[in-house]
Length: 255
Image 1 (cartoon, rainbow, N blue to C red):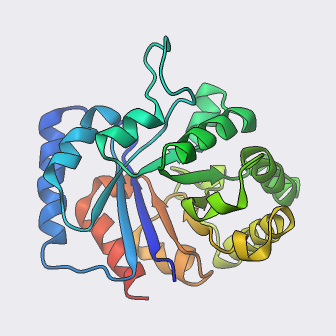
Image 2: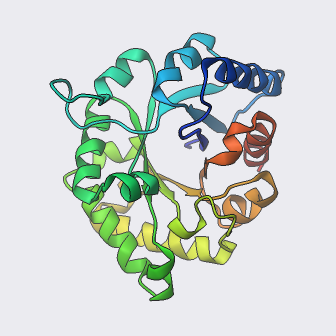
């Protein structure tokens, strides 16, 4: 039985090494004496801080990155390859986050290339999908999610699915404090499960963990994760607050 998973996406925070060291101190303090038997906890800092996180080797914490480039190496100024991430010691990579789509124009084709690179280099992927407020208003949620899944998972072999977690993050909820109801998340879960079952064998599709992402807080963890029986959460802002982040992990691990 796969463990649940709590992923912290620190985004472009904090702004200094000193602040990040303080963050790690606080995170280590909050985790002291706590055991997580049913849950993996992943922290994805800005890549410039990745080695600091790895060097600390904090119990119960795995390291990830927020993005990768699809090529292994070469003349691609400013890019970080999945091979570099693997070599550094991280084990997870987020791909297709709504902010990557919005600010950097990433589409399904680009995300698919990145996902293939992540899997080829032996990393675990957190694949983000989700509809906008306008798409939901027009009743296009199912259509959008299916299109994203089909494009992002193109040519991905069934045997690789266990290394992919799908994070449903409705764009209208990311950073807005607009929390979907449990029924809305359950509806999206059913759409995703059905789409995956149509694309792959049911047994293969069932190996993928489904997470919820978008304004996740400890006071809504039950609503967005436990009630709709999701396999974990992708946490944004609250992951910058060690007390809150660990509290979320505890709530999910205990249920």
